[in-house]
Image 1 (spheres, rainbow, N blue to C red):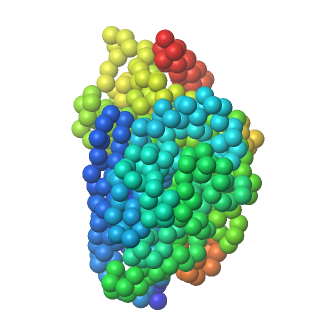
Image 2: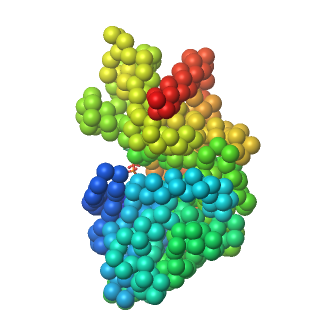
Image 3: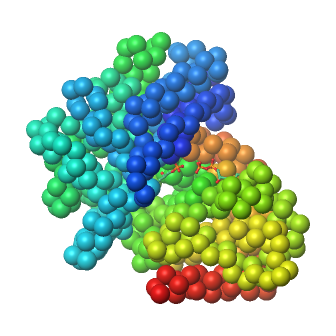
Length: 496
Ligand SMILES: Nc1ncnc2c1ncn2[C@@H]1O[C@H](COP(=O)(O)OP(=O)(O)O)[C@@H](O)[C@H]1O
Ligand SMILES: O=P(O)(O)OC[C@H](O)CO
């Protein structure tokens, strides 16, 4: 009889639930978007109750759609938007404030102060992270400082902190289990990735009482069981991973030097660097990839803020396409970019630049420029940004990357994938399973309960859909040079 795993994929814009069978095949999926709350410019919040309600409803819907019996579902795996920060009352289960989302910039000023105080290396060596409002620590501090009475209640042990994995498990177990895993902990800026524990000096720096923090577990073990009445039958919760780490696992990048890139709204590239952390000299992050059977794997990570989002802008802002999928056809009507370059720094530039003040810019317009050139330049800009991150990764790791495994909504675009291979001078490989995040955590959960014996067994389930081989040429070299000049010009504009 087949065995099944339920994956809960709690993302930034929607809650999804997917049932996988033991061949890694998707049996049923349910997805629901929830509200994005923008109380002020630069602030982004989620209603944590809505996250729980949508995630729970999707789990029930996916189970019903799958027609799989509860006894055949062997485990639940949870993967989530990372860093998003919630504090709730231990006794009532009520959040004391909305969840502050990873994109929220309200603590940027405090982060600048920390940099000015010379805390950069101190924090980087302990956490692998750069000081930024992106991570949970300053968000948690903000809640304790700004919600009336919160700090006192936290010190009295009345409040709990968690990222979305922790919150969902606490709800699924009706308040019985308060845990997270190493991958999520490694994004808080409170966790020491060398000692694998919350770091006392960091807790002091950010004034965080230890008693609010969840227990940190591996990414693959039974953390607890769903409480009575949640589902028809109690199910073990056996896998947790931040969504980008889950995708790295779902892409079976289990050997040191293997790299995946996810092309969604933004891009997240992760490289498995093995069992020792590698600190970056090129403004990448060091993070924990997973912990299985006591063994920790580390990763280097680079994020690009604007990837698929530039295509959304062509659709909603410029209105030169009606749907994202039309971009490939429009870009293909021109043989080249006609000398047009887009630097999509609409919300600054991410890795490896970390220029928060950069603005989006289009270069090289002429009377002959057409919407096709802009569409092509926009797609090319995604590939150049990924190239910059990959080059930084090669420099940090000392490894020449010859293959990039890709996933995410934009990888259906063959023109983009071919151009990506061309500028990287590497093979771009698109697997058949597109839900790499959800399948990644299904694997982590299934490994813990024996659905799969080991990684070797899972390895065979990763099947290639299409390989894009590099056709690197002089023209591509020239394109890359022009891109570099464009980024320099944007940087100059920012400085002025
Ligand atoms: N054919 C396409 N070419 C390029 N980008 C696309 C295409 N189809 C979808 N996208 C982009 O992919 C993104 C959605 O991917 P998804 O993985 O669902 O993102 P997220 O998880 O960040 O919401 C959108 O930004 C969309 O514009
Ligand atoms: O929910 P996603 O797919 O946009 O991913 C968000 C990342 O985990 C943020 O670090």
